[in-house]
Image 1: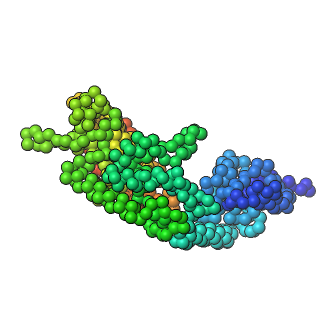
Image 2 (image 1 turned 90 degrees about the vertical axis):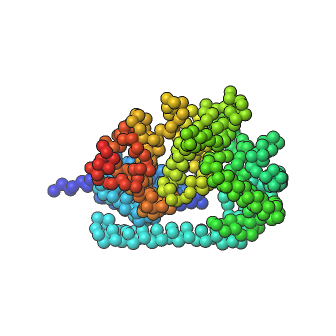
Length: 512
């Protein structure tokens, strides 16, 4: 009787190492893992096993997530039916996360892929084998989380003792032997900034003074090229510098400051005087903004860099607020931007709604309008067809541009206001796109729960769930929004609180 020839099984060997330590050696951990896997595959030659020549090596990549180039290539090859068996040295080389492992097993099962860990024998096709594997993964995940906790505790203990544990090196210092040391050239600038702020009393004159003297920040390499540049000191960086207790010899950890090992650049007396002045100016700005009702006072500019000041006129007993370019007020109309005068109500409404959505704060009850503008907006530039919102550096958001259209009367109105025009509402379209991204973050495994996603986005879970309903719009409603054909009055704030999940109920609620 002729002996049956076993089916050939293509075996992909996956290896991973968490750190770069030892990778420079001629025979490193990745090589050792591959050698052990190849030996196991040879032992199964009678079953038709053959090692693929392609290497799936991930050096210096964590097992806590799936963002690994070699693993992604392996999954692509599995989808292309180029692999029959996945072989690893130990299960934790593939992943240390139970959630990630569940996704990988699902991907393997969909293509009938076998999975083998050469030092941990089990059969994933049985319930007992899966239980064994889950137990092993639980310990692997526990080990990873325990290591993370140890690192966090070590950083907290080091900061409590005043040690510098890394991060962006503060302007005025450099590092030597993992310690902050005063850089005298930069320290002179820091002392000058604190001194001049007390003398001048506000950021505007200080910026002008620093520009006039050619004082710049630390030279850095430009992101888009190899050029090295030194940026101007603007309001945001100056506010951060003047508020930093690093300069009086302290180090931060979360919300606390501890006495540091490094030498202070300025005295506590000067620092406290600056803090008192900053607090006084903040209260003054808030009071002026509150009294005038002009939320963007001091932050609004036209597209030729002229400050726009609040003003008003009264007609038939009705008061109309607007902003006027400083160039126009000085009688220099030719130097004004493309919009020398603009309606305050429409402009403020547009900026508020855009900022609330961009900062994941769609609920107006989260903070007052004045506080929202004070904290989250550094500058607003208005032009004939767009509004650009500049966020402070500490907010870590990119500048936001909101389109505008001109009406026949020569004034402007924001595109986000739903009308019968064919212009799409950019705020609403942006929110729909973000809702789909949120859903992808959850289904793709980046976040396991809405609460975890909300914590990352610094938003309330209730608001996030409300916003994510936009990812389940009826197709005809979505098309209408993208084409700008939605009914008049259908804005994001009007839509979110009452949006049902049923498509039929959506159409009834929206009027389509």
